[in-house]
Image 1 (spheres, rainbow, N blue to C red):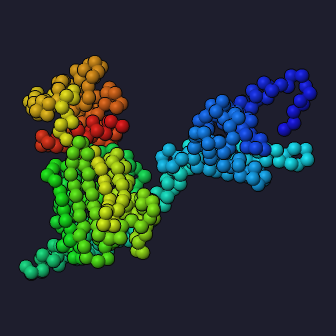
Image 2 (image 1 turned 60 degrees about the horizontal axis):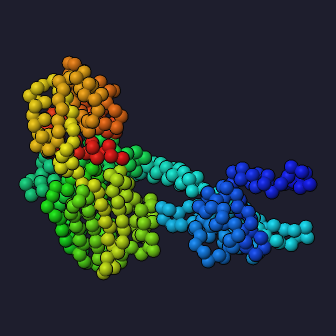
Length: 477
């Protein structure tokens, strides 16, 4: 760029305004590393005002932002070895707070070609990098899904054949053979379930909760350990399960996938006999599951890398077990952490939100049903849960109560003469949880919408309460 400095309208003020209108961040230092130019965009990217930048030096001991220090290193390198470097990136900070900055640095030369400073043009690429990583993740998921679908097809065919032959044999087998055949059929069913779990977990929609999902994790863990422990002779499973219930917002199949993957990983890591400890407890609205083994522990300096798909330290590992668990935990807004025990073994800790009937205390529930007896008993049950109830015999009456506002959740029959649950869904605010109840199985198809769940009549009081608790949890995003 060439500027007619002799023109009367050209001034330092004009040049300053010109630099401030540049959409990229710009900073210039002289030959001693002293900052002499910093435009408005650079101040925003560096999180430093102009008066803290101008006059400071690249090796200034004063407190500087991580972004400033990252750019300062690039400028200092250019002063030490004057050459142009384009399309460079640098990371400022660590973890979730890290920022990716793209920059181009070049030496400033006088008329004789002697370096007299350096300039850097830079921009914050953090959001662009995040979108790129997200797209890469989506493409990776799609690839994993295609491979998994093919594997599932190839495995399920022989499983189906084994299942059918086991059923045929059980018709003519004697009493002594019935128990082994029963175990074969159970294991085939379990294998088919795990394959289906894997395919669902690999789905791009796996992290979006769309249906009623409440499971007592304690029961699933207990049943799994009772069933699978005898098949792991080289380890001694020690279970420390506190009294339940431990209701968490995931489906039972996903709960089974979690405990199955964690125990399998732990047992495979233990080359020699030793204990494997499973702990489960709930307190302060959180259910915590811990699995500890007696193996060599996580060898990686950054264990969280093991949560990436296909990343494994095992010779025969697929790198999908922990990744599947992470996806399920994410869908329930939980946390998964990896670490090592004091004895050197591996520890996996999962924290999930706990759902309970106490969540209904103080909530305002609108109950809509044209059957006064059912409406009355639902309200009575809600009052036992310490919830406040409002009643309506039909959609029109319920609509007036909705317009008045201050409703936390709606319970409505789908089929009513004076406007059923379908019409209420159109009138209800978008984020208002709605529980549809009906005796018609086909009505379940509407429960795919987030914030709306379906409950089939008849249902138990606890099932009814947990359904409402789940819906209110789902709405708190």
